[in-house]
Amino acid sequence: MPTLTPSAPASSASAPSTTATAPLTTGTRAATASVLASQDRTAELEQAIRRDPHAFRILTGDRSTGALHLGHYFGSQQNRVRLQNAGVELLVLIADYQAITDRTAAAGLPDIVIGLVADYLALGIDPDRATIFAHSQVESLNQLLLPFLSLVSVAEISRNPTVKEEIAAAGTPTVSGLMFTYPVHQAADILFCRANLVPVGKDQLPHIELTRTIARRFNERYCPEAPYFPEPDGLLSSAPLLLGTDGQKMSKSRNNSVPLRATADETARLVSRAKTDSERRITYEPERRPEVSNLVLLTALCRDTTPEAVAAEIGDGGAAALKRAAIEAINDRFAGLRARRAALAAEPGYLRSVLAAGNEKASAIGAETLAAVRELMHQRY
Ligand code: TRP
Image (cartoon, rainbow, N blue to C red):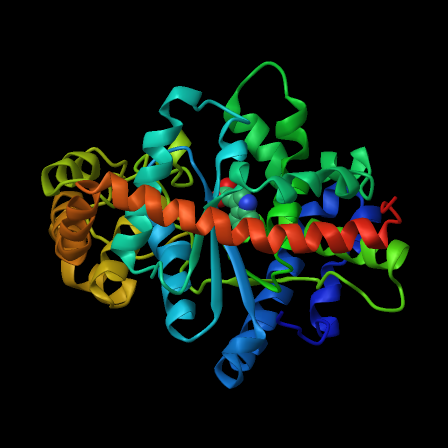
Protein backbone atom coordinates (compact mmCIF):
# COMPACT_ATOMS: atom_id res chain seq x y z
CA MET A 1 0.00 0.00 0.00
CA PRO A 2 1.47 3.36 -0.95
CA THR A 3 2.11 5.73 1.88
CA LEU A 4 2.99 9.34 1.54
CA THR A 5 4.04 11.94 4.02
CA PRO A 6 1.15 14.23 4.89
CA SER A 7 0.59 17.24 2.66
CA ALA A 8 2.76 20.27 3.11
CA PRO A 9 1.03 23.23 4.78
CA ALA A 10 0.50 24.79 1.33
CA SER A 11 -2.65 22.81 0.81
CA SER A 12 -4.03 23.51 4.27
CA ALA A 13 -4.67 27.07 3.10
CA SER A 14 -7.98 25.69 1.92
CA ALA A 15 -8.68 23.46 4.93
CA PRO A 16 -12.34 23.26 5.90
CA SER A 17 -11.75 25.19 9.10
CA THR A 18 -11.02 28.21 6.90
CA THR A 19 -13.68 27.70 4.28
CA ALA A 20 -16.31 26.58 6.77
CA THR A 21 -16.30 29.91 8.57
CA ALA A 22 -15.75 32.10 5.52
CA PRO A 23 -18.74 34.31 4.81
CA LEU A 24 -20.47 33.56 1.53
CA THR A 25 -19.25 36.73 -0.17
CA THR A 26 -15.63 35.57 0.01
CA GLY A 27 -16.53 32.23 -1.54
CA THR A 28 -14.94 33.07 -4.86
CA ARG A 29 -11.80 34.39 -3.24
CA ALA A 30 -11.53 31.31 -1.05
CA ALA A 31 -12.02 29.12 -4.11
CA THR A 32 -9.31 31.00 -6.00
CA ALA A 33 -6.94 30.64 -3.06
CA SER A 34 -7.68 26.94 -3.00
CA VAL A 35 -6.93 26.61 -6.73
CA LEU A 36 -3.64 28.50 -6.29
CA ALA A 37 -2.65 26.32 -3.35
CA SER A 38 -3.47 23.24 -5.41
CA GLN A 39 -1.35 24.50 -8.28
CA ASP A 40 1.64 24.89 -5.96
CA ARG A 41 1.00 21.51 -4.48
CA THR A 42 0.66 20.00 -7.96
CA ALA A 43 4.16 21.19 -8.86
CA GLU A 44 5.53 19.58 -5.68
CA LEU A 45 3.69 16.37 -6.36
CA GLU A 46 4.90 16.15 -9.94
CA GLN A 47 8.45 16.21 -8.61
CA ALA A 48 7.67 13.57 -6.02
CA ILE A 49 6.13 11.38 -8.74
CA ARG A 50 9.25 11.67 -10.85
CA ARG A 51 11.35 10.65 -7.86
CA ASP A 52 9.20 7.72 -6.78
CA PRO A 53 6.12 6.87 -8.84
CA HIS A 54 5.49 3.79 -6.71
CA ALA A 55 4.71 5.92 -3.66
CA PHE A 56 1.44 6.87 -5.29
CA ARG A 57 -1.88 5.24 -5.92
CA ILE A 58 -4.24 7.16 -8.15
CA LEU A 59 -7.97 6.87 -8.09
CA THR A 60 -9.79 8.76 -10.75
CA GLY A 61 -13.06 8.38 -12.52
CA ASP A 62 -15.89 9.54 -14.67
CA ARG A 63 -19.60 9.43 -14.24
CA SER A 64 -21.23 7.17 -16.78
CA THR A 65 -23.50 9.69 -18.41
CA GLY A 66 -22.18 9.27 -21.95
CA ALA A 67 -19.12 8.97 -24.12
CA LEU A 68 -15.91 10.77 -23.23
CA HIS A 69 -15.36 14.07 -24.99
CA LEU A 70 -12.50 16.39 -25.84
CA GLY A 71 -12.81 18.20 -22.52
CA HIS A 72 -12.18 14.92 -20.70
CA TYR A 73 -9.29 14.08 -22.97
CA PHE A 74 -7.33 17.28 -22.48
CA GLY A 75 -8.54 17.85 -18.93
CA SER A 76 -7.93 14.48 -17.35
CA GLN A 77 -7.53 11.44 -19.62
CA GLN A 78 -4.24 12.45 -21.15
CA ASN A 79 -2.89 13.15 -17.70
CA ARG A 80 -3.95 9.69 -16.48
CA VAL A 81 -2.15 7.96 -19.31
CA ARG A 82 0.94 10.03 -18.66
CA LEU A 83 0.93 9.07 -14.98
CA GLN A 84 0.25 5.41 -15.74
CA ASN A 85 3.18 5.41 -18.12
CA ALA A 86 5.33 7.07 -15.47
CA GLY A 87 4.74 4.00 -13.30
CA VAL A 88 2.05 5.20 -10.89
CA GLU A 89 -0.61 2.66 -9.93
CA LEU A 90 -3.89 3.71 -11.53
CA LEU A 91 -7.48 2.83 -10.64
CA VAL A 92 -10.12 4.17 -12.99
CA LEU A 93 -13.63 4.24 -11.68
CA ILE A 94 -16.85 4.37 -13.65
CA ALA A 95 -19.25 6.21 -11.36
CA ASP A 96 -22.48 4.51 -12.34
CA TYR A 97 -24.31 5.45 -9.15
CA GLN A 98 -23.35 9.06 -9.65
CA ALA A 99 -24.86 8.82 -13.11
CA ILE A 100 -28.29 8.18 -11.66
CA THR A 101 -28.16 11.36 -9.59
CA ASP A 102 -29.45 13.15 -12.65
CA ARG A 103 -30.87 12.45 -16.02
CA THR A 104 -29.42 9.23 -17.29
CA ALA A 105 -32.01 6.59 -18.04
CA ALA A 106 -30.89 3.41 -16.31
CA ALA A 107 -31.55 1.22 -19.36
CA GLY A 108 -28.79 3.04 -21.24
CA LEU A 109 -26.15 2.30 -18.60
CA PRO A 110 -24.68 -0.97 -19.95
CA ASP A 111 -23.87 0.59 -23.31
CA ILE A 112 -22.46 3.72 -21.73
CA VAL A 113 -20.33 1.79 -19.25
CA ILE A 114 -18.91 -0.58 -21.86
CA GLY A 115 -18.43 2.40 -24.18
CA LEU A 116 -16.34 4.09 -21.50
CA VAL A 117 -14.15 1.01 -21.22
CA ALA A 118 -13.61 1.22 -24.99
CA ASP A 119 -12.76 4.92 -24.71
CA TYR A 120 -10.23 4.23 -21.94
CA LEU A 121 -8.45 1.48 -23.79
CA ALA A 122 -8.43 3.43 -27.05
CA LEU A 123 -6.83 6.45 -25.42
CA GLY A 124 -4.10 4.43 -23.80
CA ILE A 125 -5.18 3.09 -20.43
CA ASP A 126 -3.54 -0.29 -20.21
CA PRO A 127 -5.81 -2.96 -18.69
CA ASP A 128 -2.79 -5.02 -17.68
CA ARG A 129 -1.48 -2.25 -15.47
CA ALA A 130 -4.55 -0.21 -14.54
CA THR A 131 -7.75 -1.30 -12.80
CA ILE A 132 -10.95 -0.22 -14.52
CA PHE A 133 -14.09 -0.82 -12.45
CA ALA A 134 -17.66 0.35 -11.83
CA HIS A 135 -18.42 1.49 -8.31
CA SER A 136 -21.82 -0.22 -8.20
CA GLN A 137 -19.98 -3.54 -8.49
CA VAL A 138 -17.80 -3.03 -5.44
CA GLU A 139 -19.98 -3.55 -2.40
CA SER A 140 -17.34 -2.69 0.17
CA LEU A 141 -16.86 0.72 -1.45
CA ASN A 142 -20.53 1.58 -1.06
CA GLN A 143 -20.60 0.29 2.50
CA LEU A 144 -18.07 2.99 3.43
CA LEU A 145 -20.65 5.63 2.62
CA LEU A 146 -22.38 5.03 5.96
CA PRO A 147 -19.51 5.77 8.32
CA PHE A 148 -18.40 8.62 6.06
CA LEU A 149 -21.84 10.23 6.14
CA SER A 150 -21.55 10.36 9.91
CA LEU A 151 -18.41 12.46 9.63
CA VAL A 152 -19.81 15.43 7.71
CA SER A 153 -22.57 17.89 8.45
CA VAL A 154 -25.49 18.73 6.22
CA ALA A 155 -24.28 22.35 6.23
CA GLU A 156 -20.88 21.31 4.90
CA ILE A 157 -22.45 19.45 2.02
CA SER A 158 -24.82 22.33 1.28
CA ARG A 159 -21.91 24.72 0.92
CA ASN A 160 -20.16 22.58 -1.70
CA PRO A 161 -20.08 24.85 -4.77
CA THR A 162 -19.85 21.97 -7.23
CA VAL A 163 -22.98 20.32 -5.82
CA LYS A 164 -24.79 23.65 -6.07
CA GLU A 165 -23.79 23.92 -9.72
CA GLU A 166 -24.75 20.34 -10.46
CA ILE A 167 -28.12 20.88 -8.88
CA ALA A 168 -28.66 24.05 -10.89
CA ALA A 169 -27.54 22.32 -14.10
CA ALA A 170 -29.85 19.35 -13.51
CA GLY A 171 -32.74 21.79 -13.49
CA THR A 172 -34.94 19.37 -11.59
CA PRO A 173 -37.48 20.74 -9.11
CA THR A 174 -36.23 18.52 -6.28
CA VAL A 175 -32.83 17.31 -5.12
CA SER A 176 -32.47 13.64 -4.31
CA GLY A 177 -30.58 12.45 -1.25
CA LEU A 178 -28.11 10.74 -3.53
CA MET A 179 -27.45 13.93 -5.48
CA PHE A 180 -26.99 15.81 -2.23
CA THR A 181 -24.57 13.30 -0.77
CA TYR A 182 -22.64 12.38 -3.88
CA PRO A 183 -19.43 14.13 -2.74
CA VAL A 184 -19.43 11.79 0.25
CA HIS A 185 -19.85 8.86 -2.09
CA GLN A 186 -16.95 10.26 -4.08
CA ALA A 187 -14.87 10.26 -0.90
CA ALA A 188 -15.70 6.56 -0.57
CA ASP A 189 -14.61 6.08 -4.20
CA ILE A 190 -11.25 7.58 -3.38
CA LEU A 191 -10.67 6.19 0.09
CA PHE A 192 -11.89 2.62 -0.44
CA CYS A 193 -8.50 1.92 -2.01
CA ARG A 194 -6.67 4.48 0.14
CA ALA A 195 -5.61 6.40 -2.94
CA ASN A 196 -3.34 9.32 -2.20
CA LEU A 197 -3.56 11.12 -5.52
CA VAL A 198 -6.58 12.22 -7.54
CA PRO A 199 -5.99 13.94 -10.88
CA VAL A 200 -8.84 16.39 -11.28
CA GLY A 201 -10.09 19.52 -12.91
CA LYS A 202 -10.62 22.64 -10.83
CA ASP A 203 -14.33 21.97 -10.49
CA GLN A 204 -13.61 18.81 -8.51
CA LEU A 205 -11.38 20.45 -5.89
CA PRO A 206 -14.21 20.92 -3.37
CA HIS A 207 -14.76 17.15 -3.48
CA ILE A 208 -11.09 16.48 -2.80
CA GLU A 209 -11.25 18.88 0.12
CA LEU A 210 -14.24 17.03 1.52
CA THR A 211 -12.46 13.71 1.02
CA ARG A 212 -9.49 15.03 3.00
CA THR A 213 -11.83 16.19 5.75
CA ILE A 214 -13.48 12.79 5.94
CA ALA A 215 -10.14 10.97 6.02
CA ARG A 216 -8.85 13.28 8.74
CA ARG A 217 -11.96 13.01 10.86
CA PHE A 218 -12.06 9.25 10.53
CA ASN A 219 -8.44 9.05 11.64
CA GLU A 220 -8.99 11.47 14.52
CA ARG A 221 -12.02 9.61 15.75
CA TYR A 222 -11.01 5.99 15.29
CA CYS A 223 -7.26 5.75 15.00
CA PRO A 224 -5.49 8.94 16.12
CA GLU A 225 -2.30 7.03 16.93
CA ALA A 226 -1.98 5.35 13.55
CA PRO A 227 -3.95 7.24 10.87
CA TYR A 228 -5.53 4.72 8.52
CA PHE A 229 -6.69 6.83 5.59
CA PRO A 230 -4.31 9.06 3.65
CA GLU A 231 -5.47 12.61 2.96
CA PRO A 232 -5.38 12.49 -0.81
CA ASP A 233 -4.11 15.31 -2.95
CA GLY A 234 -5.76 16.66 -6.05
CA LEU A 235 -3.38 16.83 -8.97
CA LEU A 236 -4.47 19.59 -11.32
CA SER A 237 -3.96 19.00 -15.00
CA SER A 238 -2.13 21.77 -16.76
CA ALA A 239 -4.79 22.02 -19.47
CA PRO A 240 -7.14 24.94 -18.98
CA LEU A 241 -10.87 24.29 -18.86
CA LEU A 242 -12.39 23.68 -22.27
CA LEU A 243 -15.80 25.11 -23.02
CA GLY A 244 -18.52 23.39 -24.98
CA THR A 245 -19.88 24.51 -28.33
CA ASP A 246 -22.35 26.79 -26.53
CA GLY A 247 -19.69 28.60 -24.53
CA GLN A 248 -20.63 26.81 -21.29
CA LYS A 249 -18.45 24.21 -19.58
CA MET A 250 -18.08 21.21 -21.88
CA SER A 251 -20.17 18.50 -20.36
CA LYS A 252 -21.71 15.23 -21.48
CA SER A 253 -24.94 16.18 -19.81
CA ARG A 254 -25.12 19.68 -21.29
CA ASN A 255 -25.15 18.35 -24.82
CA ASN A 256 -22.45 20.76 -25.97
CA SER A 257 -19.50 18.45 -26.30
CA VAL A 258 -17.49 16.86 -29.08
CA PRO A 259 -17.23 13.15 -28.21
CA LEU A 260 -13.82 11.55 -28.68
CA ARG A 261 -15.32 8.86 -30.83
CA ALA A 262 -17.24 11.27 -33.09
CA THR A 263 -16.59 10.73 -36.79
CA ALA A 264 -14.84 13.39 -38.84
CA ASP A 265 -18.21 14.47 -40.25
CA GLU A 266 -19.88 14.62 -36.86
CA THR A 267 -16.96 16.68 -35.60
CA ALA A 268 -17.39 19.11 -38.48
CA ARG A 269 -21.09 19.43 -37.76
CA LEU A 270 -20.60 19.98 -34.03
CA VAL A 271 -17.79 22.49 -34.37
CA SER A 272 -19.41 24.47 -37.16
CA ARG A 273 -22.39 25.25 -34.98
CA ALA A 274 -20.17 26.47 -32.12
CA LYS A 275 -20.87 29.93 -30.80
CA THR A 276 -18.41 32.68 -31.82
CA ASP A 277 -18.59 36.49 -31.92
CA SER A 278 -18.75 39.18 -34.58
CA GLU A 279 -15.14 40.40 -34.46
CA ARG A 280 -13.32 39.40 -37.61
CA ARG A 281 -9.80 39.24 -36.23
CA ILE A 282 -9.10 36.07 -34.27
CA THR A 283 -7.34 36.61 -30.96
CA TYR A 284 -6.78 34.60 -27.82
CA GLU A 285 -8.47 36.52 -25.01
CA PRO A 286 -10.24 33.99 -22.80
CA GLU A 287 -11.79 36.62 -20.52
CA ARG A 288 -13.13 38.97 -23.17
CA ARG A 289 -13.86 36.47 -25.95
CA PRO A 290 -14.49 33.12 -24.27
CA GLU A 291 -16.08 31.32 -27.23
CA VAL A 292 -13.54 32.28 -29.87
CA SER A 293 -10.66 31.74 -27.45
CA ASN A 294 -12.02 28.31 -26.65
CA LEU A 295 -11.86 27.24 -30.29
CA VAL A 296 -8.36 28.68 -30.52
CA LEU A 297 -7.34 26.75 -27.41
CA LEU A 298 -8.88 23.52 -28.64
CA THR A 299 -7.03 23.83 -31.94
CA ALA A 300 -3.79 24.55 -30.11
CA LEU A 301 -4.20 21.57 -27.79
CA CYS A 302 -4.86 19.25 -30.72
CA ARG A 303 -1.78 20.55 -32.52
CA ASP A 304 0.45 20.68 -29.44
CA THR A 305 1.11 24.36 -29.95
CA THR A 306 0.16 27.56 -28.16
CA PRO A 307 -3.17 29.36 -28.53
CA GLU A 308 -1.28 32.55 -29.41
CA ALA A 309 0.33 30.82 -32.39
CA VAL A 310 -3.04 29.57 -33.63
CA ALA A 311 -4.65 32.99 -33.23
CA ALA A 312 -1.79 34.70 -35.08
CA GLU A 313 -1.99 32.20 -37.91
CA ILE A 314 -5.70 32.71 -38.47
CA GLY A 315 -5.59 36.46 -37.91
CA ASP A 316 -8.18 38.13 -40.11
CA GLY A 317 -9.54 34.84 -41.42
CA GLY A 318 -12.49 35.16 -39.07
CA ALA A 319 -14.63 32.57 -37.34
CA ALA A 320 -15.08 30.44 -40.46
CA ALA A 321 -11.34 29.91 -40.88
CA LEU A 322 -11.00 29.26 -37.16
CA LYS A 323 -13.66 26.58 -37.28
CA ARG A 324 -12.08 24.95 -40.31
CA ALA A 325 -8.74 24.87 -38.48
CA ALA A 326 -10.34 23.44 -35.35
CA ILE A 327 -12.15 20.70 -37.26
CA GLU A 328 -9.00 19.68 -39.10
CA ALA A 329 -6.90 19.74 -35.94
CA ILE A 330 -9.38 17.58 -34.01
CA ASN A 331 -9.80 15.08 -36.83
CA ASP A 332 -6.04 14.75 -37.33
CA ARG A 333 -5.29 14.42 -33.67
CA PHE A 334 -7.91 11.77 -32.97
CA ALA A 335 -7.89 9.68 -36.16
CA GLY A 336 -5.76 6.95 -34.57
CA LEU A 337 -7.72 6.88 -31.33
CA ARG A 338 -10.99 6.69 -33.23
CA ALA A 339 -9.79 3.77 -35.32
CA ARG A 340 -8.65 1.90 -32.21
CA ARG A 341 -11.93 2.63 -30.52
CA ALA A 342 -13.95 1.32 -33.45
CA ALA A 343 -11.97 -1.92 -33.39
CA LEU A 344 -12.53 -2.30 -29.64
CA ALA A 345 -16.23 -1.56 -29.91
CA ALA A 346 -16.50 -4.59 -32.20
CA GLU A 347 -15.33 -6.79 -29.28
CA PRO A 348 -17.90 -6.21 -26.52
CA GLY A 349 -17.06 -9.53 -24.88
CA TYR A 350 -13.47 -8.46 -24.46
CA LEU A 351 -14.51 -5.08 -23.04
CA ARG A 352 -16.82 -6.78 -20.53
CA SER A 353 -14.02 -9.12 -19.47
CA VAL A 354 -11.70 -6.16 -18.84
CA LEU A 355 -14.34 -4.57 -16.64
CA ALA A 356 -15.07 -7.84 -14.81
CA ALA A 357 -11.39 -8.30 -14.00
CA GLY A 358 -11.19 -4.71 -12.76
CA ASN A 359 -14.31 -5.12 -10.61
CA GLU A 360 -12.80 -8.20 -9.05
CA LYS A 361 -9.50 -6.52 -8.29
CA ALA A 362 -11.22 -3.46 -6.83
CA SER A 363 -13.47 -5.69 -4.72
CA ALA A 364 -10.46 -7.44 -3.22
CA ILE A 365 -8.92 -4.09 -2.29
CA GLY A 366 -12.22 -2.78 -0.92
CA ALA A 367 -12.84 -5.88 1.19
CA GLU A 368 -9.52 -5.35 2.93
CA THR A 369 -10.30 -1.70 3.64
CA LEU A 370 -13.77 -2.48 4.94
CA ALA A 371 -12.42 -5.16 7.26
CA ALA A 372 -9.89 -2.68 8.67
CA VAL A 373 -12.56 0.01 9.02
CA ARG A 374 -14.89 -2.33 10.91
CA GLU A 375 -12.05 -3.28 13.20
CA LEU A 376 -11.20 0.37 13.88
CA MET A 377 -14.86 1.22 14.44
CA HIS A 378 -15.24 -1.60 16.95
CA GLN A 379 -17.74 -3.33 14.73
CA ARG A 380 -16.33 -6.82 15.09
CA TYR A 381 -18.64 -8.95 17.18
N1 TRP B 1 -17.46 13.54 -9.96
C1 TRP B 1 -16.65 13.12 -11.05
C2 TRP B 1 -17.19 13.80 -12.31
O1 TRP B 1 -18.28 14.31 -12.31
C3 TRP B 1 -16.65 11.62 -11.26
C4 TRP B 1 -16.13 10.87 -10.07
C5 TRP B 1 -16.84 10.07 -9.26
C6 TRP B 1 -14.80 10.90 -9.58
N2 TRP B 1 -16.06 9.57 -8.28
C7 TRP B 1 -14.80 10.06 -8.44
C8 TRP B 1 -13.63 11.54 -9.96
C9 TRP B 1 -13.64 9.87 -7.68
C10 TRP B 1 -12.47 11.35 -9.21
C11 TRP B 1 -12.49 10.53 -8.07
O2 TRP B 1 -16.52 13.79 -13.30
